[in-house]
Length: 330
Image: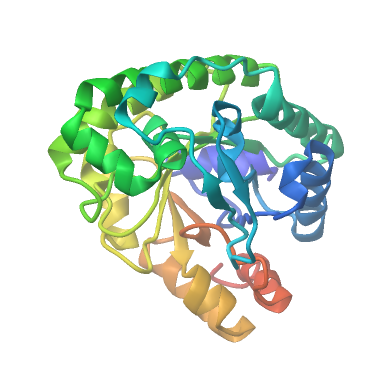
């Protein structure tokens, strides 16, 4: 069974030869150059033979050309710290202008995806491009505290900025149609009861998410929603038009079984990136993988972590994740 067949049957809830599996990670330093990021992603895939390839650029790639600056300061996730924001006052939201997706940082990411496709042309693994939600991009443009302040004190100005960011994102999606991807990994960071109220997310998040996800072309058969953080608004977001949902199921509610009951297609998770893959052992990883597969009955399930794998996680644990689905019961 090839990877596309395995994934499409998993999404549909049909029997497969085994559970699909994938991990992804940041590539600090390499993520500043299209060719270097592509090479790292391709070599990671060729080493572990994941069922899909999630390309993980720096979080600033969609907004760098608005004027933000960031640097890697040694974070184990491989994420970069923002040292300059593009919005420092509420009026700045109204001064943002849509970006050309074929130039600058967005253009480099298109180049990277094409290089990944070229590097994996003899492999059958589908490629997912990372796309951040407009609200997540706004957080990186202004910083989360200032974003929330403007959301509550100058909502009209923030909506103006979100509309501009959404327009740029839609232009980027249009450009993505010319790359060899199977879909997008859509990262949402504010659909969390720990961050804002449901009413706030219905106003400042959900309409923009729907506009973007409803614009995805039908040929993209595998799109994944990532709900970042604790206390996700899972039930609210489970109606979005995607084929899979990934969240921190090992650290927060809902658990895998409940999440699966709230979503009709595939759920992705089962492993803690910290407890199991980073601090655990190969035996712990394999035991947890088996437990997760059993918990959901091995159907409509993709084995992974709830977010990026640490850049220093033991390679033996990463190998164990891949091997776990090949074992009896996997």
